[in-house]
Amino acid sequence: MKIAVLTGGGDCPGLNAVIRAVVRRGEQHGLEVMGIREGWRGLLDPPLHDRLTREATSGILHLGGTILGTSRTNPFKKPANGPEMVLKNLKALNVGAVVAIGGEDTLGVATKFSSMGINMVGVPKTIDNDLSGTDLTFGFDTAVGIATEAIDRLHSTAEAHKRVIVCEVMGRHAGWIATHAGMAGGADVILIPERPIDIEKVCEHIRNRHRTQGKNFSIVVVAEGAKFAQKESTVNEKLDEFGHVRLGGIGQQIADMIEQRTGYETRVTVLGHIQRGGTPTAFDRVLATRFGVHAADMVARGEFGKMAALRGTQIVSVALQEATAQLKTVDPTLYAVAEVFFG
Ligand code: F6P
Figure 1 (cartoon, rainbow, N blue to C red):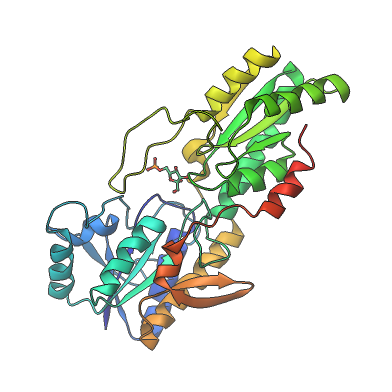
Figure 2 (tube, rainbow, N blue to C red):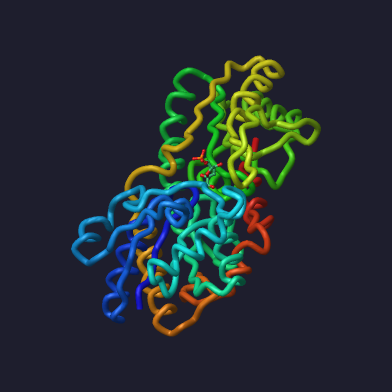
């Protein structure tokens, strides 16, 4: 059977490890693997594809990005006949099954094609770690490592200059990166989308630290999707094809407010795409490899309409709908542990 592999949505460290694993395991099952370029865009007209072999995917395990390229194209949005085009091209290319590697948007599209009769297997990906159905997504560990190192570095300069430094990390709907990196890096306040920001409380934590604990610097970690209890924090209203606002700017807003209210000199660092680029950690390479092997096994077994997922220490198959059914937000008991160290 010929199968197609695609990577959609924001890139994520570990995508190449999945592709390599699908090809290597796929070849063992006698599957011919075709790489679709630029996510769902590559199945519209004209289709963009390459044959993927063991040779073509050699030496990519440790590389960030994706050799297939990616896009946020939503074929159910544009063009009007997008779904028909995809179905027509899959037929013309003689593709028997599709392995879609992506987050909520890519897997949402995969779920729709699955219900239209396409043999679909999903692999969950996002540095945000906010997909339900799997305990972890690959890329998250890498992003947390990068953010933690940044927070460590911000500590020494904040202390040297007696400043408050606000570090803005990724996390559109959920504050997993902020919570983990903030805890690992010893942040004094962590702000996440799950908890509306009470700026007075944040300032009180900082004042308390500076006045009663002999500290003259503080580190605040904020997830880009965090919002104020009272007012909308989004400053950039550009939307992508899945209707997502391009985020960024909350860190600066928080920094301005802290400086104004406390009088402490405050600076901001926005980590942005640094968290998503570059080489995956060993943990992410292993998780991505296990997902890829499992996905190829699912195709070989004819187990479609499902995605590979981590449950405890095991890789299992769960219904594709489960990935997008609900958002996996930060566990309140984990955040409660982080809060022990605020202020
Ligand atoms: O979904 C993953 C993510 O990294 C989000 O945390 C972030 O909001 C978004 O992608 C950024 O996407 P883009 O690279 O398209 O700006």
